[in-house]
Length: 127
Ligand SMILES: [Zn+2]
Ligand SMILES: [Zn+2]
Image (cartoon, rainbow, N blue to C red):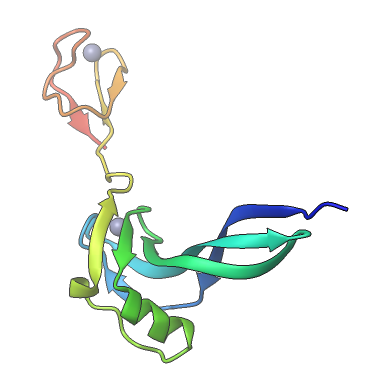
């Protein structure tokens, strides 16, 4: 007989419905809290977890922050603890809310920060 041991990465979503104005895109968004961890599987049954990390993802633009683990613990226990900006460390910026500009003359579209159309030189309008 041999022992089936494996290690997998887990992710658990923690409900939180705190509505905030996003520091990245300036829109209203929700903090979506989740936890990642490593787990040891014995015959496909998780029996040991370690390396917990808490993250927050903005619902508006997908920006990811790492959450202070002490605060994460509290929230995962359902304390309703409010997340403050200082509990968060930016991990990756989300989609930036970029303006799509379209050339009125030739219809060329770009999300680059051009004032004039790179194709025909016409002044670009913002949409
Ligand atoms: Zn945002
Ligand atoms: Zn053009």
